[in-house]
Image (cartoon, rainbow, N blue to C red; front, side):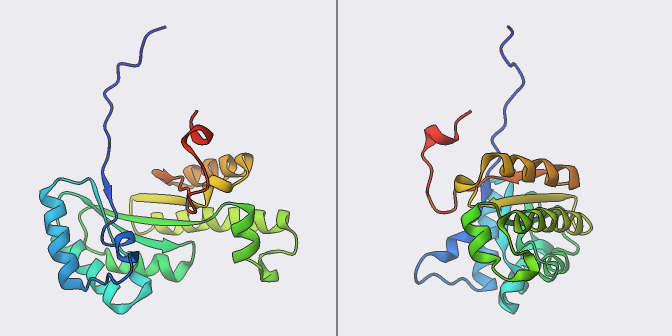
Length: 196
């Protein structure tokens, strides 16, 4: 058996401007975010997750300004699997040289049962899972209308049923996701449980 001789590249996805703001007492305005984004571009990161445009007018403006100015890295905007979020990302990223939309939805039974209690998502867990899977596909399809690069996150993947997670991943790839993010949102898993 021949060893894999294909060159490997580790892509650096920097989320300082989005997830980094979740640290207590941290709040960056659009001016500060632009300063940090300039330095990230100097460092040659591959992707800068600039923010969550639909969360506030200030975050929308920060993503818009970064998308317009920063060259080199892909500029990524976060959304839930909600049309309004994705459309805000598309507007904020308009004119960006390398736009990326990062959209996703809960994948674990715990998240699906807890976050999607309303009957419009179904009355049984099985119905909810079918609806969530369709929402994931619809989100990726809509995001592809705004950006060639679409990243999908399966929230709480660490606690998701593996068969459902695999089904979700395959479905979003078929819908056009170019990157799949499998986050252990709650810190539930250990390396041995996620290794191949």
